Image (tube, rainbow, N blue to C red; front, top):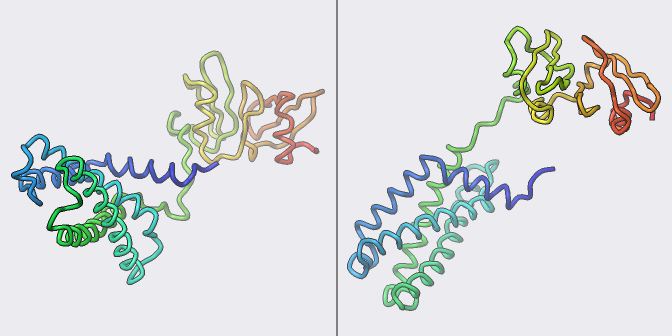
Length: 259
């Protein structure tokens, strides 16, 4: 089951935020703003609170811009339509930042909005927000992984654990003491790991755990026979794989046994 969209957006924001390129840019912007102290902060705040002020606004602005861009921008849209979305996203971010700065200034300086320069600062904030949104869009496109080619083969992480000459389509995985025996069409290999961990590494291989000690690949089953309230799967290579009573519905569901 896929995660809800808000959770996905937050995970993507965290991934982008922690990327060295993003962190370097945000720290650099915070440092420059702290040093030049725009909007009177150079004279009204000493260095430590000024650094905290601009660092907070920089990271808050990035977060606001990213979440707005996630909601508004669409990778599939290009040209003039995409430019219009950048303008809209920038304006929305700008209004959000104006509200945030107004609250922050009231808390820090005890002034409503921006004093006599409210209109000027608001306009500047909107322009900066649009510019930052365009840069953020470039960052997002740069940091997003390129889609895999349609004909790219599915990876099976478990196969990376076995010798090259034994790598091939999976047949079965079985528990033996603290090891699992990984069986492929090219051979077998013992690996020190839990069955549950091995199953998580089968990738898109069609199959399932059919016994507390066995996993089987459905496309490597040649036949299935009932054995009382259990069953046996005959595989393309190697020994049979037992199916416990609780897993009988699983192999019935995929058509290996009649319902």
